Image 1 (cartoon, rainbow, N blue to C red):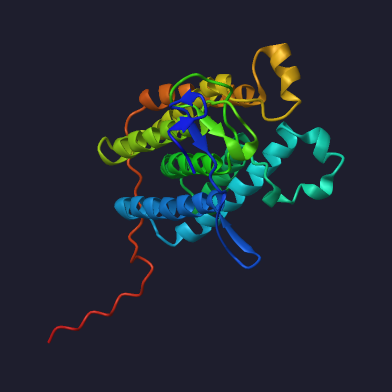
Image 2 (image 1 turned 45 degrees about the horizontal axis):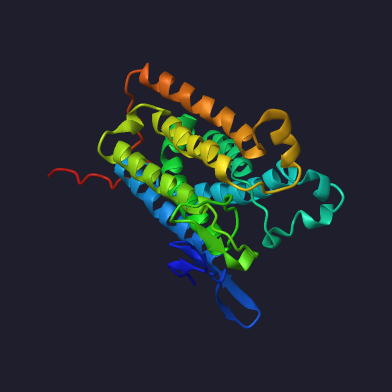
Length: 295
């Protein structure tokens, strides 16, 4: 899979991982799909624990999971279609649904998830949207790191040439020179962000300042994404024109609004007093036994 020495390039990592973990007949389990599955499973457990910690109805979790999964997958796919390769998919619309062929954009998934969580808050919890955002984003930080490791196993979304000792030669993708393993860069940033958000929630009760955790999440995700894009390879040909005109690629352009939103949310949340959301007695709607008359 990897080696500490590349031909004539000491310390470079030769990376030739198989993106398929194992196959059973026509069914193949890929590392990328496994990363999604593990992320959503662990994320569900984390959010469930937060619900119990605050006394929120756990029956909400099922619908919340559906909203999150559907919004993430559909939004990420449509984000790739419209933001990165609309020229191609506008001519081949029948291929938009072929998600197994690759093509997911995190910015599209983020936009769809924001919409979905506002709808869920209005239809299900009837609580301010900040209440669910400040929990979901903690799990998303973990999922984001796992997905980038899935990208590493697929030998995709890596950076340009580098002479640094941790450069990776992505043999499976036909590369012969060490490149920045930008998947690892992003994964490490997201895992550190996950640890920070967990500390904020469990040790500092940051959830009592609505939108604070979400604001830190936006900065922790999109500032590293913006900076790492400078050493990442261009993903689609259309981005060359954007770089020539604006000095930034599509990923960076899409990150700027989220960075500004993150700053605004942090400033707003720190200027407000702490809040504690209360939930009705979980047994309030249950029929209570009649009291026994005194004799």
